[in-house]
Length: 339
Ligand code: EPU
Image 1 (spheres, protein in one colour):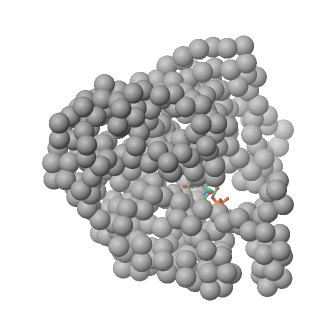
Image 2 (cartoon, rainbow, N blue to C red):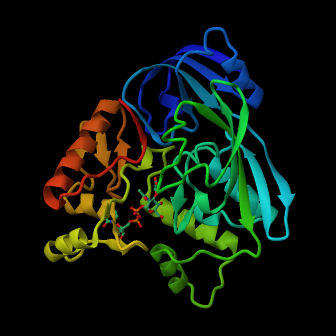
Image 3 (tube, rainbow, N blue to C red):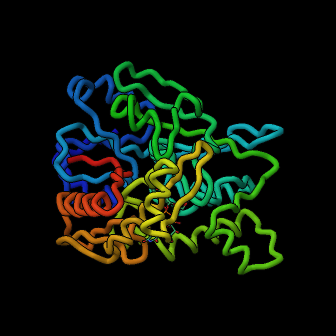
């Protein structure tokens, strides 16, 4: 482990927000986590766990001890009759893992290509895109308890996955560090092509039975067309969750706004496209100070350069107020907000 003090976290969060960390500890091994737990000073200090910083809004300085997880490594743990089991270190970039598994001939993660962030952050918010969620491919999560230093393995049920949610965002927030993630890639491979954007790609390429690599390439194309590259313009992907409403609420809104984008859920509720709601309120491309709504996807807030966390939060609040005013729906932020 390597300890730094008085560190600006701007290069460590994809929104590029300036926030100071009193202490930043780089952790490269599981043993490193235990060294922190047993450390005379840092052992008892409150902890904040940082991966790629792609799902966090830092709107203040951090007095908690920031643990930057940089644990590397990836391997085929086991080949079963019905699946490949892959294990990766929490610090590996997620997209690199997806591309590596495909290159090895172990498909199953292609719909999750190009999602920013690290492997260790993937279970925290149960990343998902184009009809697939991490929960669908998770075998288990290996984590170290920050009080006892013990290593625990949690299966998918124990991770209590929900829509962009897990036990690591709730009861275990700040209490344990994910060090390794095990994924189960089922055999035989079956493509997941139900999402509208992928259906369009199929229609544009009639007669093609897409390979896993082809699907990954399509997903990358779709994402690049809509979502800003955090390396070029600061953002954390979707800023709000897609809200869930009752059938009655949904009917009510459609009566006033017939174009409402809505998806029926198995339990009779409807999921609405938050991006559509924000767009309908006229926010696309609008800015408050240096914080702006992306001009191709209203669900993404961007740092146009020089924004502070407070500006992003002011913009997010203004969006929430106008969506509530027009549709009666409270939008819930998707990233972890540190304010
Ligand atoms: N829409 C608009 N205007 C906008 C944005 C969207 O009208 O400005 C409409 C679109 O036309 C479409 C619908 O809203 O009919 C949904 O848009 P899209 O397919 O782009 O997906 P999303 O619901 O906005 C979700 C995830 C994304 C994920 C995509 C694809 C959430 C909060 N977001 O976005 O995840 O990549 O589906 O599966 O669930 C992320 O979590 O950071 C993220 C990017």
